[in-house]
Length: 319
Ligand SMILES: C[S@@+](CC[C@H](N)C(=O)[O-])C[C@H]1O[C@@H](n2cnc3c(N)ncnc32)[C@H](O)[C@@H]1O
Image 1 (tube, rainbow, N blue to C red):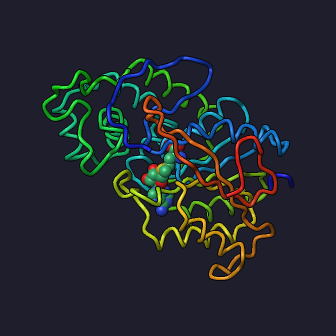
Image 2 (tube, rainbow, N blue to C red):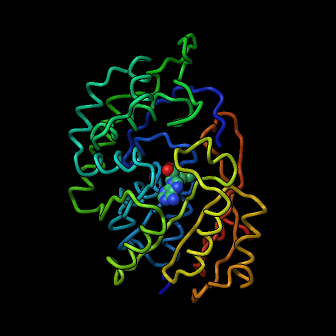
């Protein structure tokens, strides 16, 4: 078949838009909203809109999945993330939307609440989902962990205070859009699993569905500063082995580093990753990305690796 940056230095508020599109309620570090035009053209190029199933095993803010779903370019998505807070968020947003809406509507967006949730995000899925969304929208660059503090600082002396990105109406609007898609059966599953288990499960459950996987793993560089679940070298290597052994179509995006190029080139050449049994060998491409600090104009080059034969040439060049 055809389809077989961060370092935001100021947390400046931006007006939320309310167009027909669906933006993620999460301000996710490394969110791939900017790859949406690439995926739209990719699906069109391969005569695959709508595509029956789009799978994001590293969901994070799921920017690409949400757009493709809302635009009707894919019929359904599977979202998975190993971070229990991120998983809980998607589970509640999709299947218990009104509980999360109630919790956001009632949220006390203060430094005290931020400290309470950082110290203890809770035990139940409902509590964790709320903690995830609250901390994501009130912490520097949307980072849920580590040294990332509250927007406006611990003394709240900045012009931008802790609540400056907590647009309750807009967040609730987005949550309800997600809930509607899920209640229409467009979210096939939300999984708390690691990438290998997600792939194994999807390949069993959806083996007869036409599907495309989009893998967006933690960054090669600085991943451990941004995510509660990050990758070491061994995990990047395991992912390369997993992907190069897959027959189902996939697209992988990475921050551009020579080590990753070498890792996947090796698999293409069939040496250190000779486990590949894939019918189509991965190809390496790159594209320009501008991460969310758009106002600073800092660009980044994103590496796109895929086992698809055709990519929209206007978006990528050979790596
Ligand atoms: C680069 S982010 C994904 C960003 C997403 N594409 C977006 O647009 O917002 C990577 C995500 O992978 C998750 N993650 C880390 N290790 C994982 C693993 N072994 N399996 C599944 N998810 C994992 C992290 O929790 C993080 O949410």
